[in-house]
Image 1 (tube, helix red, strand yellow):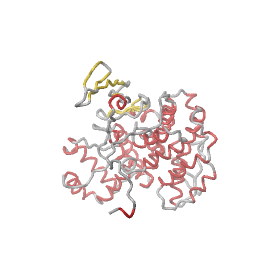
Image 2: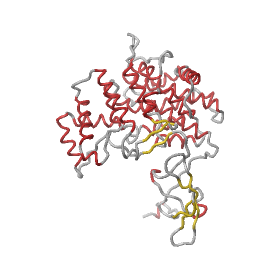
Image 3: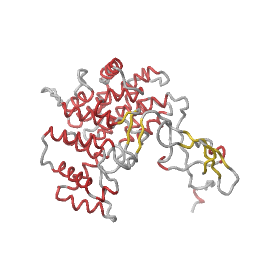
Image 4: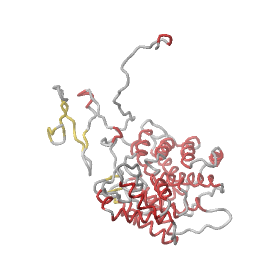
Length: 435
């Protein structure tokens, strides 16, 4: 592959006289991409990129990540500024519409979310069909997918107004479903949403309140939850977002697409990372066992993994982690938590990772999953709910990405290619003639 002219590359098949000129496409920021759509027509070959780690699957204006520099932008705004100065509903508007709202736009959007928080009463019966010990993510997949059967009055994805209503319904109702999944698992009554509460407050209310006594909001915990939602709202074309886009490319309704994203997020390599952090800390058992655990991590012949450190995308540092670290210490201070073995171990691992040359040289810094897991544990949220909270936050990113894809005039059904390595053509052999 060599430069032919500015904005294009020439590809020549080795051993042949066949070549093709492929245009370069330039984004507003970040690396350019080679447009390979004519590669098969011109040269008769496809590209091979397992996991799509080097392939741009779409053109998007929503989120930008520079993993080498530790940059995360929502619609151009640094995540640090949004986490400090904004709140989740404003960020949701930004992701969906491309610009920060003015006061009137924000008030109207907030009202639209608040008045869609209740779910159809018949959906309540769905929860009774699950075992009490079912994983909340299994409940989420089932109930969110079933929403299409109850809200089929606005499923024309070609109608902008119906897309807007679907977005409101998903952003508003997924927290209700998530909280009810938790309440169902512990045998407590469902708490209906309250329109007088802000988004994060309302979610904490539905998670923690009971009918027999008043619920008092803690502003420190509420702010922590809001930050967690902001930091996880979108993360470019990750596995679950790509799943939503692929499902949506078929014309599937938005509820089915978001249910598909929830299923993809459930995987431990994706949304289950903060749950894995708590599992790792439990396996260490006691702060005195940390030196032996660290020695195992450093041992090349050991399969011991350090969870919550480093990131596939961020090769320098995770910009969300610094914000979560500050929030983590705010929450621990507010709750007065001391002498908690899991949290003591977490803080000691943090200290080692930030001072040990082994971790520094490999850029194994604590990531957002490390701190968010500690925060949620301190707030009394069980580990089985960690990925569910991730889904609550990411719903707005998924629906924003889905909306952008539907509105893209060049959008077409997703159809990845493959490198076939199975048997070549062979004829059927009768059963009595087979060896």
